[in-house]
Amino acid sequence: MRKKVYAIYFSPTGNSKKSALSVAKAISDDITEIDITVANKQPTPQKFGIGDVVIFSAPVYGGKILKEAKERFKKFTGEITPCVIIASYGNRHYDNTLIEMSDMAISQGFIPVGYGAVVGRHTFGQIEVNRPNDKDFEENKHFGEKIVDKLNRYDFSIPLVPGDPEYESIEKGGTGGNFRPLTDTSSCVDCKLCAANCPMQAIDYDDVSKIDNELCISCFRCIRNCPTGAKNMNEENYIAFSEEFTKKLSESRPNEYFI
Image (cartoon, rainbow, N blue to C red; front, side, top):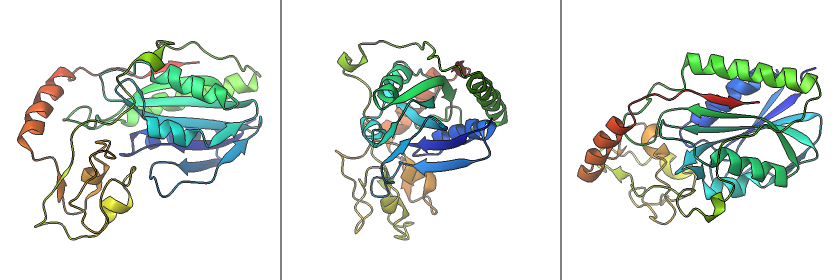
């Protein structure tokens, strides 16, 4: 029996959304998307039941889930509700993200019945620029089908996943990078899309060339979605870093699933 699926995702550049939906479609035709990406467009808190399936999907930030994303996920609670956890990353590693998201979900009343560590384009450099691709989506589909089979057998066992249980003591991770997008004012048409859709509302709405350095998480959503290319990272230090980083993470990693 196929259940109603809720895909809840924090997805600044679309990787986590795409992965969540490709899994969701294999589980059910009845899908509700809940996008928690933009700070001032947050959905209302919701509680789910045992007859639902919830997918939590988010990108990896330095081996953890972004702190702000984790806080937004906490608005959703379950009542012995099966869930699927997906962490997307760009070739480096997902480190402790799955175990951290698992603990989060369990504390909120969910039962993680499956996990996916899936590869997508990295924010920085030119790393896996065409992923997730059709092969990834096909693998996600098979994963979703296995979730259906597991639930049909009333198997609510929680798989073991890699990660350090003491992740909270690890200082790194869970925060944004140090790169701040630039604005080419000569090509900016002041459409305000970057400010309106910034996950952290770090871009000044009245002057989109101004970015709050404390709020910005270096997700590059504004760069990827700027209609004129005015938002950019044409800065010498970033270009040098980007080239070296691209070489370092040139080897593709496979998607990993735990069920």
